[in-house]
Length: 165
Image 1 (cartoon, rainbow, N blue to C red):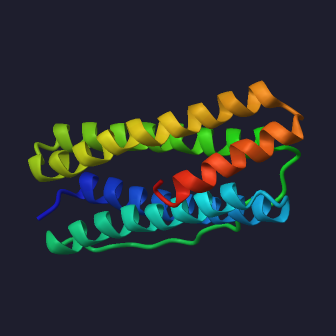
Image 2 (image 1 turned 120 degrees about the vertical axis):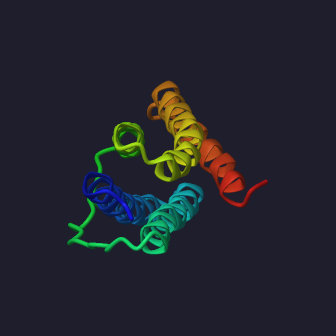
């Protein structure tokens, strides 16, 4: 049985991951409207990954006899002033996800819940990769600013990454 404080934290993280999914769909919509199909594909893939993250925790809660509580998800932002602003939104989202996962890990430690600690280790490792791409894309967007040619080259590169190439 999952302790009350761990269950609450796990349910909060499920909600966070589902919000991330929706945020990434909003980013995909905006990038595609800007004719940046590579970024659109990348953020659709990220949305799918976030859905997987949420369902992994959800199944963990169910497997341990806990009750999953799903809440409302607000509509995502779909308007940005620039590529840089959109990418900084993703970067901030990944940073907040890392903080939430670390907090959940600490909650599991304090509750002496090694099963949840073990689950969260996977997420901790995953967040290193997530923050890496977010920081890299923001850094590249800062360098290229309004260079349309460079932006389309970056979009092409991101499209390959979305396909796993």
